[in-house]
Image (cartoon, rainbow, N blue to C red; front, side, top):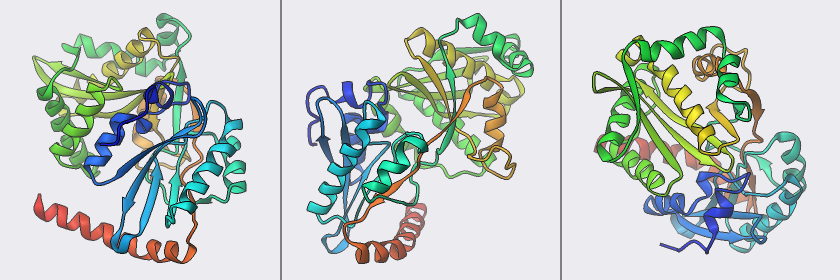
Length: 336
């Protein structure tokens, strides 16, 4: 494992624009999955970028900067993008992908001027709701939608207790809830070993927290949050039928919000919502209706962009990659 430079997480994760996917822990996770991490310092301490390299057949290479580069302010983005474009060119990469959590108004211009082009997204979240945590708890609760406030109070009234999770058994409980939610909602779930490694590594590094809601000692809802700079991010959540009937997800999310405020977060990020919130056919529309009851202002991200030093190889990759990925998924399912 390539060691991260001293102070890496302090800048990459804990600075105001930081992100867990730029952490040394995430580099370890991805290295175990076949990627080679490179910790690129562009400034001191910012900008910087965790660059993940993947070797393809015939020695070809691609690179990805998940939720980066990290900059102190949008004015630093051109410098960071120029450094990454140079790295891709000097390394003869087919492409290097970035997807910073920056507003399109701040990022599109610098991306275009640096020669980056809009590309396929890896991260599914392009829009979110962000709640300012500056008001006190009473004010935050008063601002919650009336029906949502009623649902929050039902959690305790119906006998649901919420606690901080600890240990592998609690991670497994969250996974089992996640599987139940995935089957109900129709989204793809990876293996327990994948989530055990990912969740466990991030929790151990102090970048993530897991909470469980329990009814008569049995988990009925769970949530995983990330601390990215000054934001607490509602990353993953799940509930079973007993949790739905007791409104456990409402009380659990409220606890995540309040604990984020108590532990110094300045904002709560609710995770993915539809880019167009009027589209009821969007898979994120149902979760959006749940989240918006708690408040928050919409925020957009610029999305993934590629710098492409080798245009012909890039065109060939874009044709071959979907076939290759589908074959890997089928093989994985057969092994599972």
